[in-house]
Image (tube, rainbow, N blue to C red):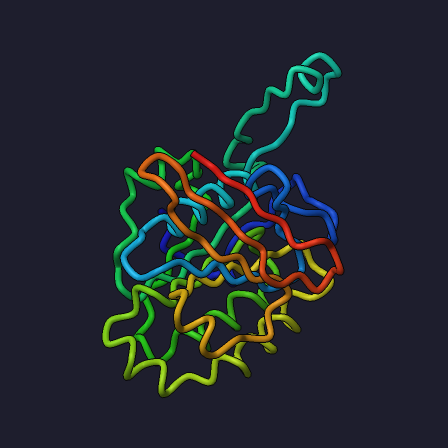
Length: 221
């Protein structure tokens, strides 16, 4: 995983148009140029896997031939072509082998380890760089989360994040704890609640979508 300044990141040769979407699951697409909240119960641990899947999808480039398109096959673009993704990980819990196993190109993933009280500030700076296809902000794994949250105005931070990525192809993905997300709703463009109906499956419920799309439900393995 790269450890360089966002200001020095090379822009990719393959670009996505602003306004397109990133598939999270069948029937659930994440808007670009917007802030999306992925809220899961404490201890579920599936939000990280889902976020890694989003990063991998954003870095994936479809083949241009009609045969490949019809078969649905796809490839991970080379480091020179695939998009940068960013991950703000104040708890230092992201595990590189698991990231690679999820299909994310480590050479195009910048991971930041800010102090807990500066998470929102760093997130805004990274979002406004307009370099990242996906920027994941882990609010769940913040050491001393209760104290840190008291110092962060997340409603203000989300508005700044939305302004920073508006009109771009960046999707900012906030990982939140479900009860907290329900108790203090943030002004995000989309909110998705995660549950685990069985050991093998995870359910997704879109509880907010500013695009006016019917609120969706989906299950993934």
